[in-house]
Structure formats: C-alpha cells, structure tokens
Length: 186
Image (tube, rainbow, N blue to C red; front, side, top):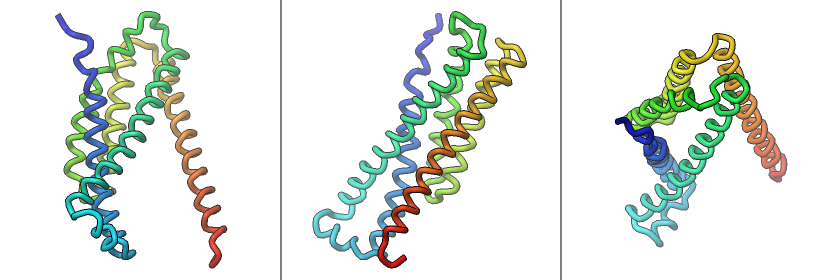
C-alpha cells in the first residue's frame, strides 16, 4: 500500500532549506554593508557577534520563507488553473502524478548549501531547480494529456509567470525611481 501523502512535507522543508541558505548569504552581505556604513559598532553595543548573526538570520530567513511560500502558493494556483483550462481529467490524477517532483526541489534546497558564498550560484541553483521541476511536471502531464493540452498548459504557465515577474520588476523600478527622484541631491 502506498501512502499518497508521503511527499507532503517536502515543500515545507524545501522552503526552509532555501530560506536558510539565502538568509545566511544575506546575513554575511548585510554585516559587510553595516561595517562599511558604520552602524555595525553601534549594533554591537546591544548584541554580541553571535546574537547579531542569529537575529539577522531569523529576520532574513523569515522574509525569504514568506516570499518563497507566496511563490509556491501562486505557482500551485497558476498550475491548477492551467489544468482547469486544458486538462480533461475530472478525478485529479494528473495533479497527483507530478507530486514526486517535490523531491527535485528538496535536492535543490540541499544543493543550495553549496552556493551560500555567492548570490549568483544560489540564484543559478534555484532557477535550475525550478526549470528541472517544470520539465518534470510537463513530462509527467504529457503522459495523460494530448499534445495540444500539454503545450497549452506550458504556454499558459510561462505567460502568467512572465507577466507576474514583469509586473514585479515594473513596480520595483517605479519605487526606485520615485525614491531617487525625491532625494534632495538628484
């Protein structure tokens, strides 16, 4: 007998792994920034070195956890909406078929520990993990769907993610330009 919930804990652990590795990198970079700006010594008056690192790790890991959990929720919603539009499966077998792909994210989270010292390596591992998971899911779904439905799911998901990411980039640039233009020396 096979338990259908055997992979249910992997997304949570994966998000924790990626949050910790991105958080550790951010702690190191923020401490370097704090030292160059000159506020590190002031922070050290209140906290010891280890307390400061742990405090920053908790804060940054929590922020990354929230962002990654939101991306997971958005990703699952986009995927299930695509399946609603393009799949003829009324019982939900195709959704459960791709659950084994959570293992890909789990091993990507473990591999991200290698890239703690480099943002680009962390980002590469994360993007590569997402790409491998996407290919795996499309492959698993193609066994139960027609070619047109598989292409439809793939294009729908890519289009929605590109629109979503373009919107985020647009908002970030608008905020940045607004902040820079409001500074008195510009």
